Image (cartoon, rainbow, N blue to C red; front, side):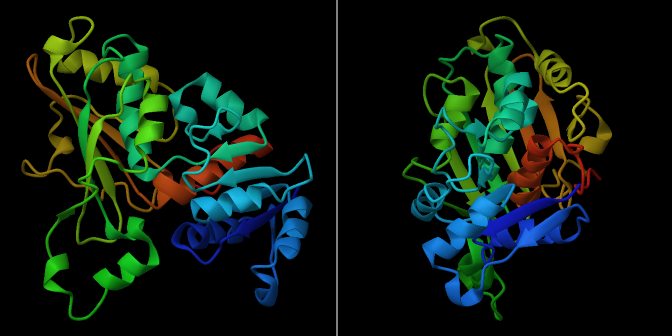
Length: 317
């Protein structure tokens, strides 16, 4: 059986990557808009309505406009912007968070793909809150180290300029006003009473992302050390094809004491780690910001919704 799929916004970083995934699939017929009519709402409406799935790879305002175009009740819209990630009428596209998330992705015709930072943050935090170890009131702090591809075409061009501007040689923290656009979904799907203090950092590498979250066990809702945290994550993600929870103290977790942010690149895999002891703990979630952090997650949601194998066309290793 083949499915008709339209990518609205194929020219962007995520849209291009989704198009690559789709082009490798024998079961997908890609619908294409005439270049001259790319911004024509009626031309796009016709393709959206003709599709089984339409991916929206657009800025928030444009995504809302495109989502409003659809009149075919059988068309599934999978949006990669931040526009609908906390909308209760939309499924949140991170099935590993639990059965309710996976069931909603299968059933609903509106699916919001998580942000890359939010995916890594939530995969570390959500199970700990759900298990009652971390109280909803915990003042969570985290940072993300990410490749520059997450900034889109302009940032990619800036980093690939020859010669490289001196200002781009080292890591660059940003969003220091503490109002990053992923905060609402981090709070909502993390089960937190308040948004975390979160600072992302762009590094001079194309892709790869790791979110580190800090924990003081003295503020947990119940007694737990680093081994309990690792066990909680392992139990929550048991049987999840794309999630690897690494053992505490495993020498393979680090390379001479250093952490490799890029080890999940070109996969849809997420690696989860817990470091520390009974007094202080950090959890780290690592993924490819263009894979599981964006386009890979969108394809995984499409697979689930269409009843295909969840990992179809997606690399684990």
